[in-house]
Length: 83
Image 1 (cartoon, rainbow, N blue to C red):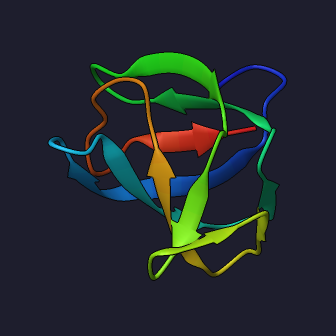
Image 2: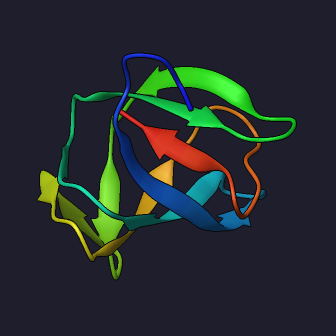
């Protein structure tokens, strides 16, 4: 677990050509939030600059939704997303 961070979801898929992670959310998240993505070989922080549901840009997503998230580095299914 990442210290002082709250788990907000898990990576379920990654599209390397467009550098987009699919994240199944367990907590709400907003554009502009700083997140940490952590896994066996993944460990980086970034700001959420854009996220989509079914190819529509959205400013906020709720728990239970699956979002497409532009990421700056490679992620893997099973990686955990923290806020």
